[in-house]
Image (tube, rainbow, N blue to C red):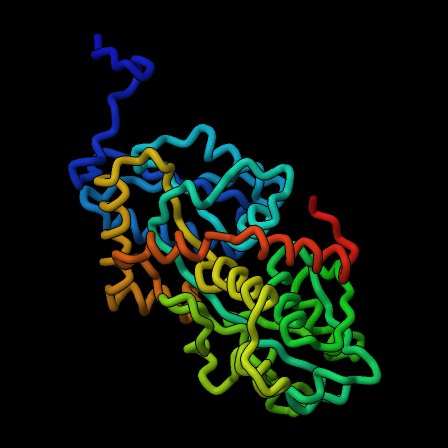
Length: 352
């Protein structure tokens, strides 16, 4: 008869605190459906990471879709094993509802321990035929530009906050099924202004810019280690939103609009996708995962193989990651209130 372990008399306790995951299986909880961008990213990272973790544990991706990612994430914080063998995958889809404190959300990213993060970027562009040749054409317009969105309480929120900060003349229509349909609507003249993420820039925007039917205006930028907005390394020639503000208004931005934009930019772009373990996970176990991820991110063969999946941004698992993410996810109540009021007053969306 096998020994009876206290946790249920079926399996021995995990031995993940000795720096060796041999014989274990690391389960990734992916709170979205199979086949999407987050799922593809998680499965690729999980496969490569478990090959790098000492002992080469097994890898088990588990999709638990529902409620725009909220259902699976809620389940994770209630029942996930706190031994380093169960990992949560997050993306902007699950971060924004938390930031807005939607009633269905039961999770809190500030109480989880990050293992790694991977960012992305975006470029805002406009249709030339809408009378846009540069930044100056975004304000003091006789006719507002029409923006096409999916939902104001998803990834679109970052762009809406950029519009708010820049004091642009924009009207928005939501309900598109993706950025691809918005791009096509812009080409047909139904939409005037849009954004594209780094991964689709070459296919969605560059051809339009080359033929001069669209103009790239600014990048959303990135948040650096000091919490400041800097140029996106993939779009070095484009100004950030902060630089665009200075050109339009002759001074540096400040106040609630800037803080709201900076906060949301950090959690939806700079740290868009991340891996987390429960707060009670032994530090030895979480550090084994983090240092393995750091080693993986520096591997040249991995960098080559992961170029498309990572979207031109590093796999971030450095020793100061926990501190930086902790700072990025500290959402001031005034920031949240500004966002809630913007959604209510400008887009007739009540999130409370």
